[in-house]
Amino acid sequence: MVTEKTIKQLIDKNGEPKITITLPTHKVGSDRQQNPIRFKNLLAKAGEALTAKGLKDHNVDDFLKPAKALLGESLYWSEMGHGMAIYITADHFEVFKLPYEADEMVYIQDHFLVTPLLPMVSTAGSFVILAISLERTRLLRCTRSAVEDITPEDIPAAINDWLEEKPEQQIQFHTGSNDGDSAVYFGHGNTGEEHKEIVEEYLKDVHKSVAPVIKKLRDPLILSGLQKNVGLYRKTEQHIRKLDQIIDHNPDDLSDAQLRDKGWEIIREHFLNNLYDSLEKYRNSASDRVSNDPSEIIPAAVMGKAGAIFIAKNAIKWGKYDEETHKVLYRNKPGDGDVELMNWLSIKGLETGSNVYVLPRQDMPVSADVAALFRY
Image (tube, rainbow, N blue to C red; front, side):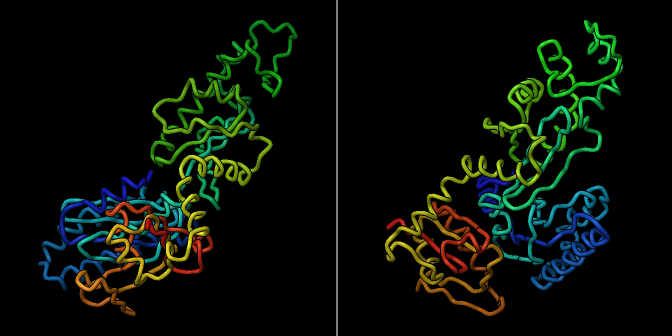
């Protein structure tokens, strides 16, 4: 899971130059084949830029070798999100799959481009819901506005199907039964104490199937289900980062979208209180305590005046900050020494103790690329 700690570790990485590559990716269909081709083209662009900066060809090849090796991993490209962010230095290589689209860009500077990751710690982070049911167990990966069914193919989705494949469990299931009915059936009303062991064994197999997926994603996990079933599942799971609060509802009665909405309410309560408090303070503060002027916000962030900074997702401004005059110089397109200012502002804000949020434009407190709430 991407956290503010993840962002700060990238900011603190040693080594120059630092390369950031971002691109949108396709999850399914014929367009998915374009993902490694697009990445290869961006690597070529990065190589040209490094050569232009004076690196020898063999040094460029060494620099990009870990990234190029990724092109040969077909399994990796079969499991895509909606975007990618890749971070490279001479001794560091890290890739993040994003649950939202990213603009196509090669950024080479003395710092990384961290704004593509910041939505993950604002309102666009992903979370996982395990909907525990004896009739239809589902694993869903969600963001605030999207939901995807990622239920593994080998999961025992329903206990009746599982029983049909487990003759040893059928014997245990029918032990003590005097009705002479040899059919396998485990319905809503048949989850009493005498069959608790059956449910536990079923949920152990569910956990074996979903645990590798959940651990690989590293997203926070929310359990959904009736209290008795969730309680039995908690006895089986281990080493998974889950929230204590559950969606206490029979998931069979809820659509994927309804589960996502209920999960979002929990995520918002646990992780986003500071964001919504800051948005409320912005809307209620006097005019001298807020601003949507980047020429005012950037110097304020450098001097530690900004308490909260809000940046619209995909907002880009090129230029540089003059530390002697505290003036911001803007460019229509990047020139020598220019940086992406919204990213640079994010880094300076985090370094001086600001809360930095990258939000969908409709969630910004004002209709602007950037806004800030000042401490004084």
